[in-house]
Amino acid sequence: MASRANHLVLLGCGLLCTAALLCTQMIGSCAAQGGASQPPASVAAVPGPKAVSNFPIVSDARLAGDARQTRFILDLDKPVQFRAFALADPYRVVVDFPQITFNLPAGIGAGGRGLVKAFRYGLVMPGGSRIVFDLTGPAKIAKSYILEAANGQPPRLVIEFEQMDRTAFVQSLPPESRPELRPAIAEANAAQPDSSIAQPPQAPDKRPVVVIDPGHGGVDNGTQAGGGDIMEKNLVLTFGLALRDRIEKSGKYRVVMTRTDDTFIPLADRVKVARNEAAALFVSIHADALPRGEGDAHGATIYTLSDKASDSEAERLADTENKSDAIGGVSLVDEPTEVADILIDLVQRETKTFSNRFARTLMSEMKNTVRMHKHPLKSAGFRVLKAPDVPSVLVELGYVSNKGDLELLVSENWRNKTVGAMAQAIDTFLAKRLATAGPAK
Image (spheres, helix red, strand yellow):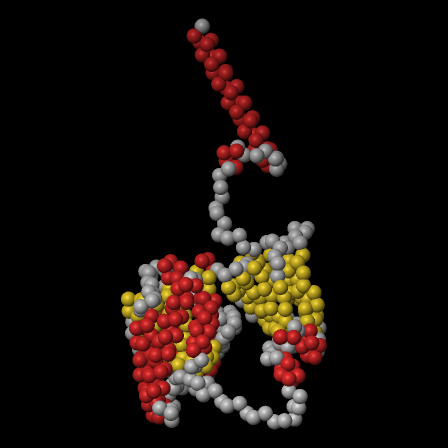
């Protein structure tokens, strides 16, 4: 009896194993044939990785056509709203979007086709992105529209450019954007009944000139944070424009910006702006970042020109900033020698003294309202500071690689306080210098 019972137990186990095996094979067969069976609710409910943002994503862009008609196509992951408009002198077309994420291949836009010489793109402000097309000549936006996703293809933005002559191009622009009507020339002519009467020449503006230089721009984004959504070029441009507005309120100084939009300006051209304007002061605005693995740093730093860097960090930063011309595709081979003779050398020494004096004045004002670096005054061989006859400083507002500094850099309240401190330092420095120089200067 015991032997028979054992035999039955073994037979039952065998049947159970066979049933289990058949069940497994059936499940595998259903999976291989794309069956619609869903996983258990407990598995389906497990959340996946959290998305970084829900901004629309751009994955590809291309140009087609010729010098008469050119089409631009942008691949998106979802439809977006946009606004497209043309500008003159130079000929451009600008397309504005709500904030989008550009996941485009490196180098795209550097070359053109047909009516488009090149195009550039990026975040112009929190919540807003832009594409700028540099045109070969006057052209109109013949059509611009969004194609919905269809037949396995993603949503697409399509812009069609069409060649036209300059007269028609200018007439197609809004009145406020027409070159010949800027600024309100038509109204001025209407108010002047006899244009043959010669108007007395306007007296030259003899106010001291302050040049504000927001670093980077265009294809050169500078340092980045927030997964690339926060770019140095945008932070410093916003700050530079706010500083310009604050200085101009006093009426004492004329302010010249090296750039007022997302445009790449070579370092040598930034220096030329200061020299051509016979500037009394040149202030370059930047925001630093430490490479990963090199620790943490915070606070604002003020740099002056020196052939020898004050420390390794200053040397690293100068090397990084001086390479920004290479990012813009500009050759640095033909850079002229700075000191041609002993007279220029003497001027440069005097300029360096004034630069150091302003740097100390600026530090004294900023330290009362702004978080400063533990070593706030440094020097290095920044090419943008090499105007031999213009006192120049480079201000690193903070480190985008530091969470605390980044929160301040995007804060309007912090920006207003820092702008106020810098404007006060500029006024203090120039007032003393002009008083010392006298009328002849």
